[in-house]
Length: 369
Image 1 (cartoon, one colour):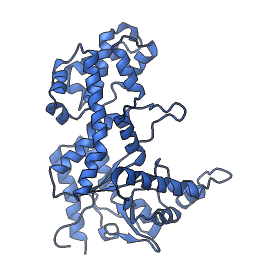
Image 2 (cartoon, helix red, strand yellow):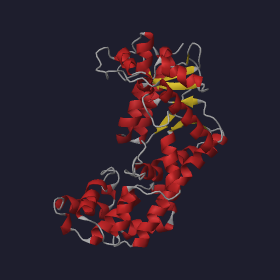
Image 3 (cartoon, helix red, strand yellow):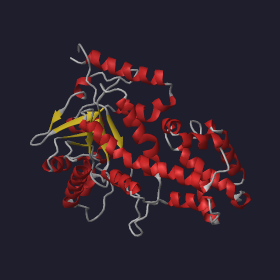
Image 4 (tube, helix red, strand yellow):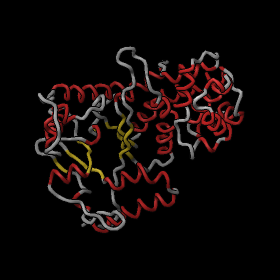
């Protein structure tokens, strides 16, 4: 193939629905934390390169939780965080903090900050005896955990956050309240920034089934036998195609409320697709979906062979759209490159990671007719 190789980049932003069904409280903090570290950063980075276009899937349950945080919702960790400064922690809450509040990459984050590393060392030394740690220890731990989850660029651009990072210890209630407030503000800004990028034509926002279920299994659990004839299935079968249709329709309605227009594409949860699921997606009015190369290989009876660097020997089988009879279009990801982005490149230098990806894409371009 001569000339440029068009590359579709699809970033999947997914968090499960963390609201407790009985109490309506959020039980895990990951929506709030990832909003302050990853989601805004990716959009802002894309803004620096207006010639680059990309797709993002924003799972509806994630987007709705972002809006809940913007309206003042709490999760278990924000409540514990605010209780630290009043010295009201129970022994169970202290144990919870020692388990949860170091949940960030130790090498890339904790060990880069002397005070946070010191807190980790103290926590490890007294893990079975949290009563040996002072109230000030838990205040500092609460602030460092939440501060460390904020993108470094945002810390540098916010004078007070920068001061708190440099202060390192002996934090106050107002310090903690400020950090949590900044996280709420960041959460509220995520959907708006992506909406602006879509309006400017730089991104397309995809959707997924609302609560991120596996559509083929919702429609009929017996569809699992296509991939694994020996699969152990429920008896009687689980088959609720109307529920699957609702998941798609509710996702589309939620997307329209947030972004003012209907989505065109969908990433089915975990890339799981079946003829019935594809039909439901297109029946709802969507134009295309994306899935994994393994689904394509089984569907058309081919094997994707690769060379010594992981490049496809016959990329023309994968690097093309497929028209679904009676429906829309399907594309399938290169799993090798996708897995490297997700699991390997983060531990490589930027130069080596980019070089590896470009090398594989150039090899594919050379082999395309």
